[in-house]
Structures are given as C-alpha cells and as structure tokens.
Image 1 (cartoon, rainbow, N blue to C red):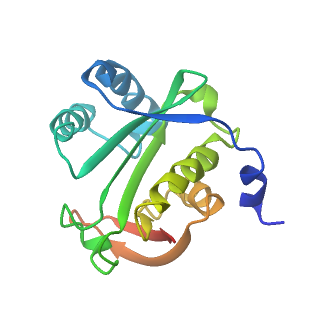
Image 2: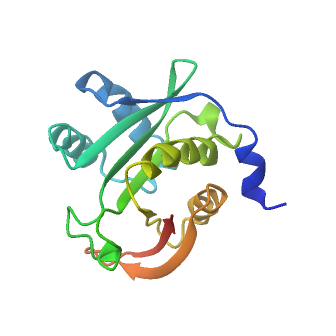
Length: 170
C-alpha cells in the first residue's frame, strides 16, 4: 500500500479560514519557531508580505484549524501571478501552494499530508492543477507532498537562485 494511502483513510475535519490581521501575532510566533524559520526566514519580511497580500485577489491565505485549534498556515495563488520561474511551464490556471505547520504538537502525526489533501479536494473543483516547489534539501516536505498525492515534475531554480523540486497534483 502506498504510504500516502493511510492518510487518505484518516481524513479529519480541517477548517481553512481566511487569514485576518488578528492572526498576525500567531503567524509571527509560528514563523519564529526553528522548524518554520529554517524554510521561511526573515520573520518581519514574511509578516509584511502577509499584510500586503491580505488585499491581493491573487493570493488566498488560510489558517488551518482542527476542532477550532489553529495549527498551520497555507496559501495558494495563481502560479503565473508573481513571475516565479519555477512555475513558468505549467498550464494556465494552475495554483501554487505553500504551507507550514506552526504548532509543534501537530507535527509527526500525519496532519500535514491530510490537511494538504483536504485543501486539494477544494482546489481541484476550480483549478486544473496544483503545484508546489519545496527546496530540494527539504526532504520532509517533499515526502509530505508525495503522501498528499503530488508527483515530482522537475528541478528548477527560483528568482533568488534556490533549487526547488517542482511537484504537481492533477
């Protein structure tokens, strides 16, 4: 049995609520944790981007909750909206996602693959493809996205020269 299959059988009722200005202190706390900061550096820059993008129709930012407890952040946007070269070859209408678990108590229990899969079910109703580009050295993220049904597409460079593993989900 593929490893990701076990997560599909343990679906939970995740809520994806819109990120609001009231959530920014929580985002700051999460962004300061070592496991998030490793991949989302410069807390002040990340908070400024979140504030700026709250009014951006191309960006959909969500707080992921389980039983009214927020534990993760996730956003999606048109893969072509921000000129990100790693997504330039993807079909029009593709959504790019990024996410992190902020609450340490939710790590290592299968929540990541499960909530990503739950959000993908919503996105598939409106978009032909979803993509993600974890850093090639972030083997944990690559594994989690594979468990959620993403397939490796290619290696690509970002605008700042980082090498990412572009993965897609139909």
